[in-house]
Image (cartoon, rainbow, N blue to C red):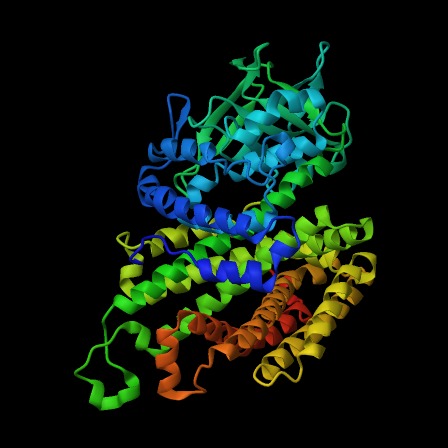
Length: 609
């Protein structure tokens, strides 16, 4: 374990925010203000959140006597989190928040999620519900519920999934019937509801999709309802129960301390709900929550992988085992830290490059969200909104999958010790797997990318992205050190464009099954391309920063210089990380895009046994 406890990649976060994306010049907050929040966020993650991770995992969230109890260590943590204003940090100031840009929040969320993933599941949906209420809620609903969500005094939840419907939201069977005195009676069962009930807060504000009697079938007939766990007294305090009950807490592979619940609404016919947005317009309003949470899930997967890089790196420097193969028989009597072994080096660099690419994707997505709301002209805001649309499925699916793979590889660095609970690797691996599944499985995200985001309006969003990358690769093609990296990025994007054209042809020909069959490898290749592009951008910046530091060109003198100069070592590693990604990750795209555009579809009609 790192000497100072929970590992945070603070230098890389600051590099991306200030040197690469230059958020302080673009999102309305100055650098000093952002630095203050990053410092405080890191301190809270290390000192307050991280110590709860392991004990909460052992204790679990449980249902006892009809009440959901979360691990005791979360109670003080939740109060501290809310008291310090982290719950409403990115919500508008006029509604009690601090107006933090999303790009800054995402950097802080990486630290907080990595420190205690299960705990952070009690945070994200409350924020998303508050955002949805601001955009779609009526003034009376905002007046009654918004302040309590922003402060964290009450919990918000998103109730879409049902036992028989799963990700097929349009198959929802939850019903709503109009009340004579206003509002609706809501009834139905919702499953896999994160934080659906617990003892951290006195009230829950459920955002529930249900079908009003007589509404059309499918998603077009769904309406979004605000359903409180407890009805409100005239003074706004929680009053009588609203016929909402938790009937199960799932026992899961990971995130044990997160209450994943099955919720029953209206068993006694007394569950009152209130429309959010328009009748039969529930999916439009719910997408406000869903898209926000899809990025949040990408952050979750990434954050756990990033934390495990720090843990595995520290372990590799401390664990003495084996001899230096580079010294042959001369080294047989000298045992060395495992970081000296080439295969361990390969694994660490793989994790590092994945992690830094996914961090860049997430923070770039955050900047695009910020600019979609802050850009000076409607045209500019629309451009950034389009980029958010394109990046959201990539951010969710690629970053969550890469985070899980990073945790798995980090466990391998530990060897047998990674598989036991004495070390953090096994919990991080268990906790990270769910990110590939919830908020729409990664396969669903891949189909969203192919069927919608990359093909809508003649592929306009994809073409705009490819133009951006093309401008960069043309400008940097002759870079003296990074020309080969830039060329690999260019060729990878050329291949992506070709595969996109092929899938577009299949789509135009109505071959929907074939397009869906290739969607997941296509999304993986897209994420590799985007990550490689961002790392190449970073490497150009880092290489320029290295020159004034006068590092020796090569050999032992360069190694000694870098060991004595942390800033030079950081920039040098940024360049080497981009080189590794371009040479080790981008070449896998040839296989992925061959899978995406294959003409062999026997799997679609094979009789499986």
